[in-house]
Length: 178
Ligand SMILES: Cc1cc2nc3c(=O)[nH]c(=O)nc-3n(C[C@H](O)[C@H](O)[C@H](O)COP(=O)(O)O)c2cc1C
Image (cartoon, rainbow, N blue to C red; front, side, top):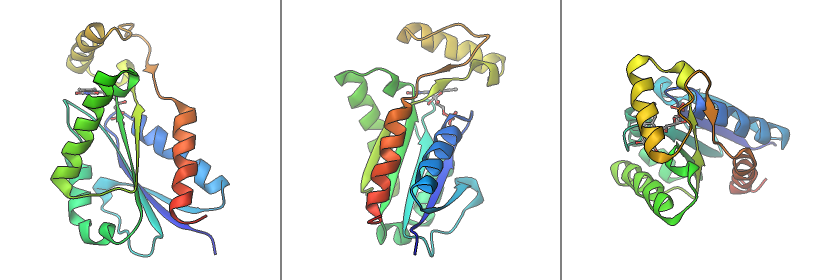
């Protein structure tokens, strides 16, 4: 029988959703049955062999939606394999300082929810300027300028390493012994 995985995510501007879709494609191609749902729909982990959760960082924190889902299902998640991926602009810079910051934000989520994941992926997200309203675009342009990221607002800028995402998905299959 094929492995059954539940992929639960929250995405404010769409990049975590895009990453979730890519992970689901890799898992499906590898022969798993994958259900993808948003944390705000409160899907039940019952009946699945493993869970993958994904969330993005806004103002230094994980979303209330994913925190709430993890807290709500803490006992079930404790008893099954869980892989977690975090999406942020911090992980677009590959150095010790940014890596420490990405881990600090991850630890904030683990402390708040008691989750103890078997696997973690820290992925770079995107500057989705065309999806932001005026205020968000202005704020993100300033942050991007400080960070040395693109301030070219008529287009979106994707920093996600898709090879790393696909490796994460392949490793997640091993969680269920597939
Ligand atoms: C208003 C806003 C605040 C953000 N704050 C942070 C932050 O504090 N740290 C960080 O690393 N990335 C931050 N980001 C970048 C997001 O994590 C990145 O854009 C990610 O791709 C968003 O994923 P989503 O589209 O799935 O929501 C912020 C983005 C926005 C729009």
